[in-house]
Length: 211
Image (cartoon, rainbow, N blue to C red; front, side, top):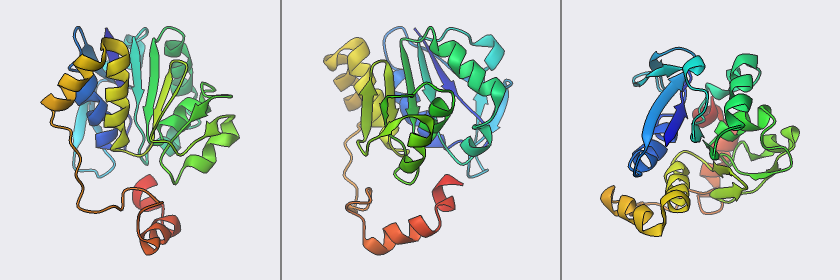
């Protein structure tokens, strides 16, 4: 089972690494990081890079596709080559997934037309322009499409998908193995629970997280 994780300049690291840590532990999984060309791809903070081990041309029939988000997503929304690749590989995937604003790339490729989907809460209002039906749920399944909300929710998405692929026992074993037992010190992880001033600050300056 080949799991392809898309990389592009200024992607958000955890969007890609969270699902990688979960899905890469599935029995028979072969994970490949893929980008325009193989080589190091820099994340949004500019001090970390992941290595793409294959180019788009070399990955044509992955079983699972993971599309992260990040500020670099904006520049790729009209990238004909990338959008064509997404449409092409989607024809043979068993699962097509995204994290955060990665769903906007899937939507721009026409893959979420008429489907329920989620994204980072600051980007949800952009989905309808591409025919998608936005929901504030943390993980959304619609057919073979699995979209996750912002950044950390990629781990939840991957565990959900792991259960669908390999069964609950395997997914639970992976969860225990990575000790995914969130106990955050604040309840500011959602716009419905965060202080109003914090929500307002991000709404006023979404570039802090979305570029």
